Image (cartoon, rainbow, N blue to C red; front, side, top):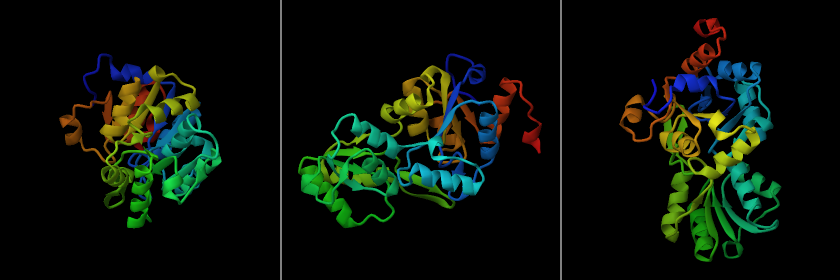
Length: 284
């Protein structure tokens, strides 16, 4: 199924030279690989088409993501990933000097990325130049209070991503966007968001991919982040229905992707047909 964009989306699919692939709700859900994920990644590698696993989830480091995905059955290395944590650290490195103190709500992913970029993580809210908020499943009320104090004291509020929920095997749990909203509401400020759908993360990811936006595709499960962000930068957008968005949601939305597929099995089948590649393995 495809939306009413000007060009034939299936013809555009054949011209894609690089892929940005969301993780949660696309490659896996919780600890379960989703249908077609290993085959899709294998096909891209066999055809030497560059790709990055692109995730708004700031909790893990690229090495942790690589270990997890390899354990689940898709061999991967840290270089295959680009996270909202990396994008946040890269953005700040272009706007603040090394050693800048930053108050952080977040887990290994964002903390390691900021430290590797040369920043100093502080637990003192009144000395922080920035307050960075990401996903943290160990968050306490004290964390929220200290982050709010940091912003009141002048720290710029930065959100790794705006996702209100995170998909898990049996449903959804609060995501980084929910934590960020608590701090932003308490402090009465509008945060700067780095992750999808904002252009910062996608632009930095395209730099790494080495593919211009008009020749790149993004595949994701969220209309308001993956698809909206891709459309904003001129990427070819694919929505899969294995995560946060149902077909009914997609049909009602004003945000329309170029292509809607049930899962990566269907996307791979369409992609192979456009490239005149064998599709027999898809039916096995």
